[in-house]
Every structure is written in C-alpha cells, then in structure tokens.
Length: 303
Image (tube, rainbow, N blue to C red):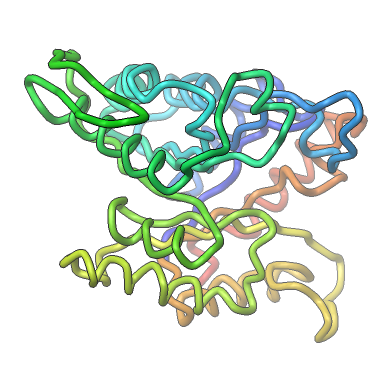
C-alpha cells in the first residue's frame, strides 16, 4: 500500500509557506505522493461545502511543490477535462512531468458544477466519447513524434509537441459502472472521489479491473487510488463511523483494510477537515494540527 498526503490547497492554510512546509515534511516522513484537486469557482448562489470556497489551482500548486521536493510523486484528483483543450493540458502537464523528473499523476474528471461549465464554455454532452478522445489526444501528444487524431470532439491535425515528458500516469475519476470500467480500460488507473462510500469500494475496484481485463490488460497492474477524507477524533468512534474517521489507530486500521478491498494507494486529505481547511480557520493552528496528523499517520506506522 502506498500512502500519500493532500497538500494545503483549500481554505486559510493554503499559503505558499505552508504548502512548501507540508510538501517537504511529507517527503521527509516517507509519504509516496502529494495531491491537489480542482475547483475553478463557485456560483454566487451555490451552497457548497466550505472546502470549495477558496482553492488553489491544482497544477500550479503541484509545480510549486515540485520545485521544493525531489522524489515524492505529484498527483491531481482531478482536472475536469471539459474545461480546457487536451492540447493545452498536454503541454501544461507534460511540462510539469518533465521538470519534476517524471513524477506526475494526472487525474481526469468530467465535472459537475453548472457555474464552471458556463464560465468555461464546457459541454456536458457526450461524456464517454469526450473522455476517450481526450485521453487519446494526450497520449499521442506525449508519445508520438508526429501526433494526430481524427476525432469528432477533439480533432488534432498532424502536429509536433516538444519536449516530450517522461510520461505522466493517467488516472480517471468517475462513479458509475461505465466510468469505472473505462478507467481500467484506457487509463493507468482510477481515483475515487471525496464522497465515495468506502464500505463498498471493493465493488468499484472489481468494475475497474474488469474493464482492464476486457481490454487485454493485466488487472493487477491497474492502480486504484483512494482519496482518504480523514477526520480525526481524540477517542475511538463507534460502529456507525465512516471509514477513515476516528482515532489514529482506527484510521491506520482502515488504511490496512483498504488493501484487502483491492486499493493500491490511499492519500490522506485534510482539506475536508473544517478545523484545518475552513476559510476562516486560524492558519497557524491549522498547520500545527495538520503536521501532527501527518506525523502520526506516516506510512511507517501502517504496518
């Protein structure tokens, strides 16, 4: 099991100094990866959780962390692909992968916020086809000397994009059966969302791996990345608790349990903890608590 950690990208703790401090400390403590997520904007009349009110750009935040680390992987879960062209993202993500020494895990989603679709001119139509074409364009731009794609949604004339990156890993989000199977089929793996019911995550894993097997891939090689929305308590919680909630011991036990469900990686994300990532939280106290959690949940402590 690989263990990652969510960077400070939401709320008052999302500052340059704190982002760098968390990134460097996570690397020192043996975490495998750092993670961000995307929220472009929130409609003035939208009632969303505080986590979405103030969010750093995920690629820029990872680039900032990349410059201050050397080995830890850099992941985004997820960039919503209808909001920008695949050629633009191929250049941006490919540059980050190249400059970081091949450390990028690029998660892709299809989006859900009407305000963001309106603001970006994105389309909610043809989601399945859109994902397939988008991934195909990314791969040809990253891998082929002369890239081209004859698509209905994302046509790419014969082109050259350089320099070539070492090769970002592609992960797909999604929760419906078709999206899960597609992640196993055309991507390097699947990344769960914050609202995923971890009690039943084995069902999602089965669909992802079935998609890989149908495509002629080795299902055991497909990555299954779990966003771990961690909520710590100073005492153990009862049977009604969600997975990854409760005491440190309960969270570590849940991380180990996720391995038995087919999960290959989990990253602890504190951006959903109101004590840490709320826009009005005290940033110094938030950082102190986050570092305490980071130290108590180090990968070495899992076993």
